[in-house]
Amino acid sequence: MLLPVFPPFQEPAIRAQLSAASLEVLQHISLFDAIDSTNAFLLQLPATQRHAHAVLADQQTAGRGRRGKTWQSPSGSNIYLSLGWNFTRFAKDLSCLSLAVGVAVVRALESQGIMNLGLKWPNDVQAGGRKLGGILLESKPAEEGGISVVTGIGINVAMPAEGTSAPNIDQPWTTVAELSGMESDSGLRDRLAAAILDQLLDTLGSYGTSGFEPFRADWQRLDVLCHQAVTVTSAEGEMHGYAQGIDPQGNLQLATQSASGKQHLHCFNSAEVSVRQSGFAGRK
Ligand code: BTN
Image (cartoon, rainbow, N blue to C red):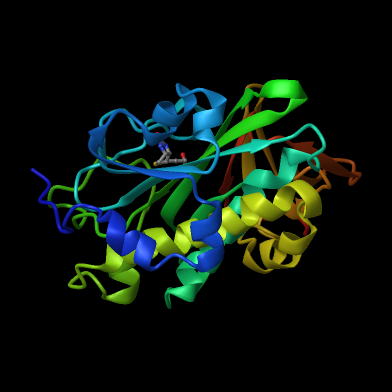
């Protein structure tokens, strides 16, 4: 059994740590002891009730990960947070929004003293090659040609150590507690949630008019795959090469070399492929 390590989320404590700008914009906070998925909860609301509505749960019974995977969501240990946001049809191209959200989450964690983080395309939050958090954006059409986006964020704050009663996660992972030694701080989870909400509200509020440009330099600073040998897996099979950052739509760029020595640059959409670092040793 997984023992809860944090007291339930406290709305007054979270609100007390939000910036004045966030408090002005935020419409609603919903807190749950247990829910199927914070993203699913927001998606079934009418779009008007979704906008600037934050949802936090202590446990998810059907947490959703990217590409149809389950997001392990034991109680009392982690952050499961979703925020709804409605963009008008005049908003900038949203194709890099999920990358901007990755930057926002890292900025929030850095503001709380959690350093040496990186982003694995498209938006896994990593530390030392281990996954610290994941981000899932889901959307629905909104009124007058707009789009309503639900941004879901899962952060491993204090999961039990591997080998004890650790959840079954299919890749190396770490926690904020492991990185920072702050597990004994009972207010940690509320504080992190407030810091993430501050950054997220700011990011969603500005993206519609400013787009990805204010995030690009930080994304490049945090890009753990850039110039690394990687394997991209899609429905067509595997491709080996070197990651070369992102194109203007946020697609992963992969440089490959054919047997005849010809170089190619391929672009991959995050919905269609997964990527992992590989031992491939071709030319950079
Ligand atoms: C990933 O696979 O890396 C994305 C994981 C996203 C998990 C979060 S937890 C809060 C929100 N609700 C969900 O059901 N999923 C997201």
